[in-house]
Image (tube, rainbow, N blue to C red):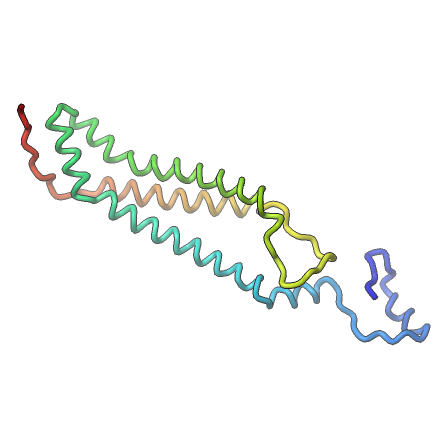
Length: 177
């Protein structure tokens, strides 16, 4: 038998006094502690670790992409065709940070839409427990703060990688028909 929220605090003592044998008393805090030690709750930490790993891998990919030799050759070819040095420098400096910021906004929007469509259906606990409230929406502080941290970190990595000195671009001869 389960007692509801309206049960008096001494309900177990009253039931025992009436001759009912009480075999256990599990409140919400005991149930939450038991569930916190089960697989689904422990798996949440792997989501955190995979998020950190994704940001680290993204930062490494940005460093590699920004310093590609082919990109330098492309800019050199555009310079031969008349692109000003200032425009070339501005393009090299801002291309990846703007790409990261735009991707961050689109990624957040996509994640929130996906949560809205499926978040209520994802299993949270290993068993059916209607007495505990299920999460309905991601945290209003946690999601924006972690998103902002990741976007600022990746934008900074992209900007620093784009601003660092590189070896001279290979010479590209102007082709004439």
